[in-house]
Image 1 (cartoon, rainbow over the protein chains, first blue to last red):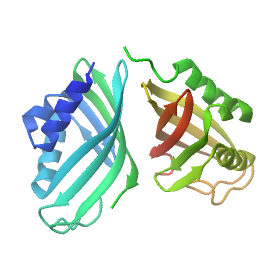
Image 2 (cartoon, each protein chain N blue to C red):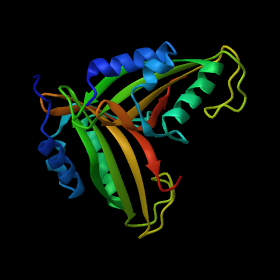
Image 3 (cartoon, each protein chain N blue to C red):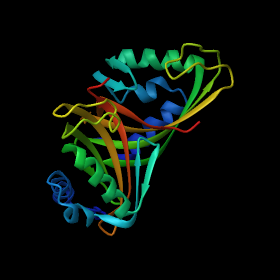
Image 4 (cartoon, rainbow over the protein chains, first blue to last red):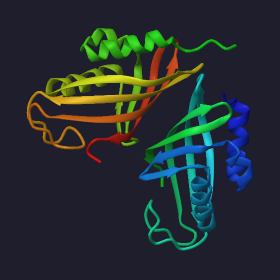
Length: 127
Length: 133
């Protein structure tokens, strides 16, 4: 079971690009699905975010979270600011300085204190 | 421990009423000024507006909703809902794909419900998956 404090710690680590800090919450066989991406395994997700964070600043704000026995759900606002041109970014072409904001609803399935399945649905493109 | 905003049984009773087209049964879960936001775009304000919207949808399709996952919080609910629509007539522009009478379309949505005094004050739904993708 993940506590609200642990989820806040996960998000804080994510936002400051602390890869060890946020990836410790991923099970080795974690599965990420959402917005056309399908990533299998802890290392695959780390590699994905290293690639993203090399090209843009990503900041996530948790607006709401709902905690259950075997997982939780969250309403997240994601802000992406390009630090490099990324013409084939999966969310649409980005030039340095471009900003995209989106609202996403995410379900996390948890085993112990690790995420085993993360699923994200885009609710709205804010900018 | 803080009191939850609704019981799991009550939420599932809401869905059951919705599935059997019991309008009074599911209307009672809506605050009068409830806001429904579909996919971050379409907004419907007010319980009666939403009921009329669903009367229109249900006049053309039979929709069955199953709750795959429900998390009840102190002031809201998160639910993963699997819906199957079966067309009762040709419906060219109601859903993500055109359907001919008898055809079906399914999707999974993540829905967040704001709850106050046992009633939904805001419902927001994001599509996670559909069989049209």
